[in-house]
Amino acid sequence: MPITTAYETKIEHISILDAKGNFDEKLGKGLIPDADLVKLYEAMVSCRQLDEVAFRLQRSGRMGTYPQNMGQEATSLGAAYVLRKDDWMVTCYRENCGLFWRGVPKEGILLHWMGDERGNAMPKPHWVTPIYVPLGTQMLHAAGLTLAAKYRGEDRIACTFFGDGASSEGDFHEACNFAANLHIPVVFVCQNNFWAISTPSKINSAAPTFAQRGLSYGMPCLQCDGNDIFATVYAMKKSVEHARTTGTPCFIEMVTYRLGDHTTADDAKRYRDQNEVDAWKARDPIIRLRNYMVARKLWDDAKESALLERVAQENADAVARAEGIAAPHRADFFDSMYAEIPADLAMQRDTMHTHSLGQDPSQLPPEAQERARQMTSEAAAAHH
Image (cartoon, rainbow, N blue to C red; front, side, top):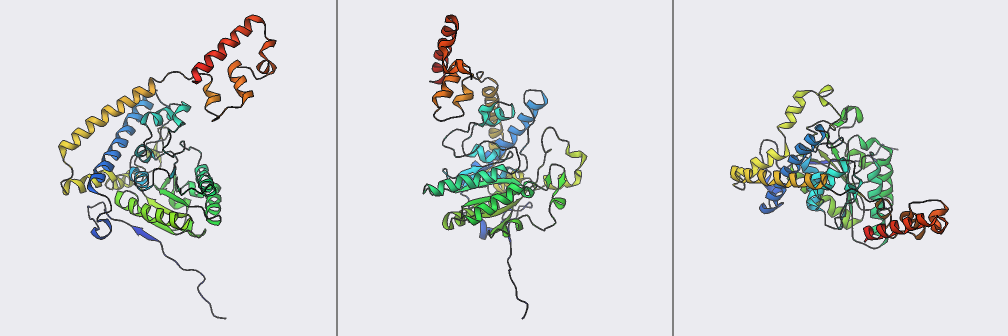
């Protein structure tokens, strides 16, 4: 029998505004209205400036380890811009720009890295999950959240983010297989920033693209310039349309670069060549977009100065709110775990006992019973 082709495909690379300022009018015309483009630029600048603030907080001992977002702002922002407000956005830990666009307050992100769990209580109804630090778990959760929406008959998709390193985790493959075989509309966004901490992507994968990893699960795959806000929006629109109309997953590789260290606990100079970093600084998504806007008279130095002044105040206010938050109440441990707390746990919360005394405070001495009543009253007041 003759040899035939069992499978053949191609993966498109999307680039609309390149680092030299060349703009593809055919693909980019009308893609982002000018008014929205200005807002997107302001959002990226605001996120970049918060990175600098957070860095200083960490270095002065006012915050724990922090992963800067600089260089990758256009990836999550392009996604957040395209997604509907009621679509799930399931992030890792370098998607601040997209989270802020969805309405997550800056102090929430700061609180997370300050070690305050209240920073993970994402405000409703933003349809975003808490920051994920373990690599890969968020992809499984995105598939599960979207399956639940499908079960309920809700027209809702999910978009989840992960790095090139995380695409080697077993969780990634399980999530892709689960979503593809059960027809779950998840948009998998791989932010290929070329480094899994200190492991270069060329060691992480021998394939020419990370987008290929989605092909083995039957997903349509795209690759785009992740430092080009037009390209990320284009790729997301195409992928979101596919997920919503077919009810099946798809995969985007956004090629970007981590301009800073992996976190404030890292020193990338020990494993990265400075020439490589400098080359990627020339592809900075913020500088690229600003040059485009200036050339089209959408932006100027006066607007830039006004933006930086406003952002500086907003960030200072966010820090003040994060550092000035009231101390947590002991009842928060219980109240934040359940939407409706079971009666037995409510008793434990109110008496601060887990043994029989917590079930029957009448066993306590009279003075201790009075104290238990006071504690119950205080807890109830704090709860309401």
